[in-house]
Length: 78
Image (tube, rainbow, N blue to C red; front, top):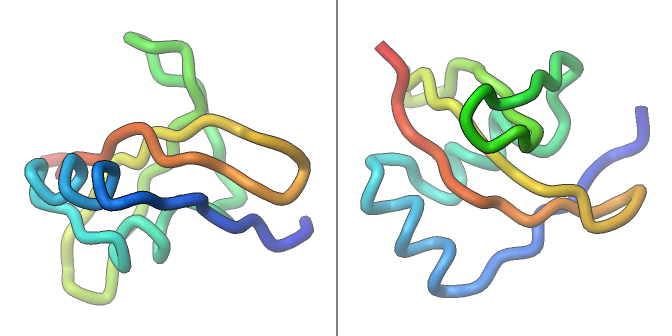
């Protein structure tokens, strides 16, 4: 699987931060997960995983092209 890169802007960083997930935590879980699922609510790609900080976020994103994603949201899962 080729390496995926996330496209960020300040609004996305702030929005995801409001849900308790940092940009670095999203990057640990999101772009290169081997287990991409489909969100039941938005039908967008979603991945789950543990970060080095001990959080277990769900990371929702959209594909831009074969190498890039745009984060949509992220939140901690119980």
